[in-house]
Length: 330
Ligand SMILES: Nc1ncnc2c1ncn2[C@@H]1O[C@H](COP(=O)(O)OP(=O)(O)OP(=O)(O)O)[C@@H](O)[C@H]1O
Image (tube, rainbow, N blue to C red; front, side):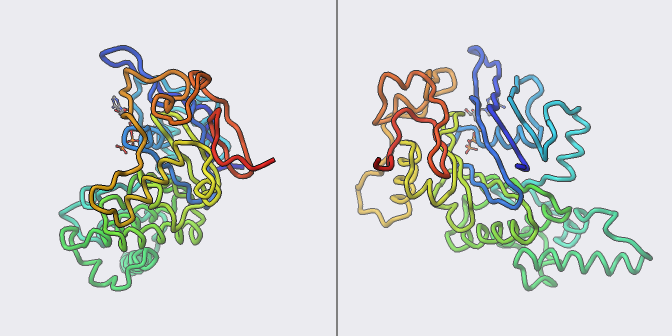
C-alpha cells in the first residue's frame, strides 16, 4: 500500500477575474521510505500540492480528489482536528531558507530539545537532562554533524547555511515523522553543500524508513538520492515514474525540455550561447490553455492537444501526452 495516495486532486480558487484551477487532476503516489522528487518551474503548483497534503490550504478554496489517502485513511473525510493530529505526528517540513525558520534567540540544543516528544524522555530530573542531551547529540550525529558539542551551544547566526539546514532536518526528524516534505531545501546553496544535503536526505529515508517529498525547480539537482520523480507544469502532471527511466528516456516534451535546460545550466556555457528553453512564457492563471496546458509552448503540439491527454504508461513511467518522445521501437 502507498503511504500517500493522491488521485485527481483539483484545487480551484476564486480570484478577482473569476475562478481559476491551480491544480488540475494531479495524481501522485509515495511509498514508505522512498525519496520522491516533485519538479516544476515557479508557479507550477508544487507548494500547493505540499500544502494540500499537510492540510494547510485556505478553507475557502475548493479541494476535490478521487483520493487523498494517508496510510489508507481518507484525509478529506477527516475533521481539521483529526488532520492536525496526523500532520503533527507523521509529517514534517523543511524549507529553502533554514535560518528564517530557526529561532534566532535559542541555541541549537534548546531548539532540538523542544522538538523531542515529551514521552520519549522519562526518569528523574537529572536522568531526563542527561537523556535529552544524548538524544540531541544523536540527532546531530544522524544529520552528519560530527562536532556536535560546539554546534549544540551555537545560535543560528553562527551557523553556515549547510549546517543550519542540517539542524533544521534534525529538528524535523526528532519526532520520527513518516514523511518529510523538503520544499526547495538546497536552492540557494553552493553545489557541494547542495549535494551533501541531498545525500543526507537519501540516507535518512533509508535509515529512518521515512519518505521524502523533495520539491525542486531543477531536475538535475535531484540526482543523488531520488528514486521517483514527478513533473508538474501549470498545475498539471506531465510525467512521473522511476527517476532513471524518466531522465534517460523522457516521454513528455516538458520533461525533455527541463532536462536539457538543467544540463545546460549546469554546464560551462560559452558566452552568448542560448539556453534551450521552451518557446513562449508560462501562461497566467487567468489565461490557462485548454487541454494540455503545455500546448502553446510545445514544439510537438497538434490539434489533438486541446483535449487533456489521459495517463499512459510504459515500463516504470507514466505520462500525459498524445505525442510522446522516445517511444520504444516496435
Ligand atoms: N494564496 C494564494 N492566492 C492566490 N493564488 C495563489 C496562492 N498561492 C498560490 N497561488 C497560485 O497558485 C499557483 C501555484 O503556486 P505554488 O506556490 O504552488 O507554485 P510553486 O510551484 O510552489 O512555485 P515556486 O517554485 O515559485 O514556489 C501560482 O500561480 C500561484 O500564483
